[in-house]
Image 1 (cartoon, rainbow, N blue to C red):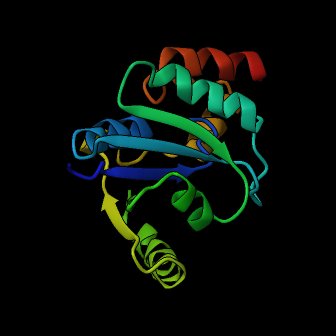
Image 2 (tube, rainbow, N blue to C red):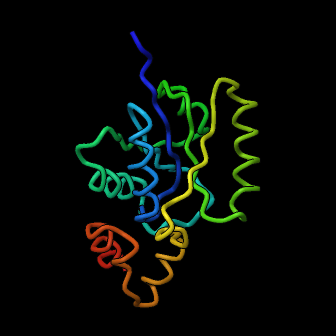
Amino acid sequence: MSKVRIAVYPGTFDPITLGHEDIVRRAANLFDQVVVAVAGSTSKQTLFSLSERVALAQSVFAGDNIRVVGFDGLLMQFVQSQGAQMVIRGLRAASDFEYEFQLAGMNRKLFPKLETLFMTPTEEFMFISSSLVREVARLGGDVNQFVSPGVEAAIKQKL
C-alpha cells in the first residue's frame, strides 16, 4: 500500500489571489492532497477574518483534491496533525528567498522529516501579492485580473 502524499500550503491569504490559486492547482498535480492552511494568528492586520478567508479559499477550490483549513499556532504542529510530509512556499521574487530560506531551515530543525518545496507562480502572476491587491482595491482600482470573481465581490463588499 503506497503512502498518501500530503502537502501543506500555508499563508494568510488576505485575500487569496490568482497567484495563490496557480501554485495550489499546480501542487495538486504533484500531491495526492494539498491542504491550504489559512493562518489565524498573525502579526498582520487582515482585511478579512480567519473564517472569511477560509470560506473564500473553500469557494475557490471546491471539488478538487484540495482541502482548506484554518489554523492557529505553530505551523509544524499543524503540518504534523495533517499527516503531511511537505510544506509548499511560494516565491515571487529573489527578495522572498532569504526569508523563506530561513523559515525552511527553522521548520526542518523543528520537524526533521519535513521538506519544503519552493514554487514560483506562472509568469503572469509573479507580481501579484495580497497586500498589493488590497491597496489597489482600497484606492478604487479594478482587481478582477488578480483574484477570482467571488473574491473580487467579497473585497468590494468589505470596502
